[in-house]
Structures are given as structure tokens and as C-alpha cells.
Image 1 (cartoon, rainbow, N blue to C red):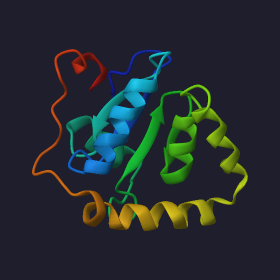
Image 2 (tube, rainbow, N blue to C red):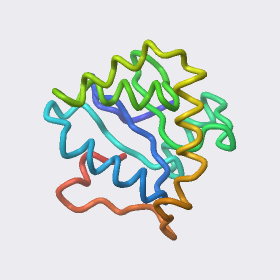
Image 3 (cartoon, rainbow, N blue to C red):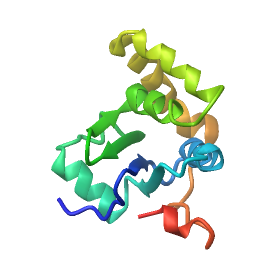
Length: 138
């Protein structure tokens, strides 16, 4: 798998047509003071390559993933908490929820993910980053 990811960067894979996911990415961009994250839609070539490499079934995991060359891939609530842990105070204290067993965290996560289009809407196509943000997207 040949992902063009800069050293020490982490890649957030998100549902590019989901309004909640797009808003979440915008939030992370705004609070990523250390410039840790890069972004790609699950629907992109890079996203599809990672999904295929890790044999991820998008019917079971279709919202957010966190990838790094050092740590591989994180899913669902674990991905969200690991992202939050890098966003500085007070967002980083959310990582305390990692002590909750994943089956409980992911049940809540899956409930929100299952209803995200109904609650927040859906775009017809993936978000196109502004020229200022283009370098953050693969």
C-alpha cells in the first residue's frame, strides 16, 4: 500500500457526503494546532485503497477511521477519542472515555452513525477543500 502521507502525520478518513462528518473534519482542522492530521474521504482513491488493504467492510464501519503508518488503523469511537486526544485542552480530556469498554462506546457511536444522514443530512458529492486547506487533503 503506497499512501503519500508525510512522516509523523495521521490520516482521518471520513464519509465525504455526510454533513456531520464534514462538520467534524472542519472542527478538527480548526483545533489541530500542531498540524498532526491529514484528511481524505472514504470514497476517494486513497480511502478505497486503505479500506481494501485492511479489508474493512463499509457496511459495518462507514464513518470515521484514523490511520497512521506507525499504528495502523483505528475505528469508530477509538478513532474519535484518539483524534480528540491530539486537539489540546479541553478536548483532549475526552480520552478518559477510552476506559469504557469498546462494545459500549461503539454502541453509542453506531447509533449516531446510523442516524447521521437523517439528523444532519447528506451531500450529493464529497466536500471540495478550499485552496487554503487543499494541502491537508490526500
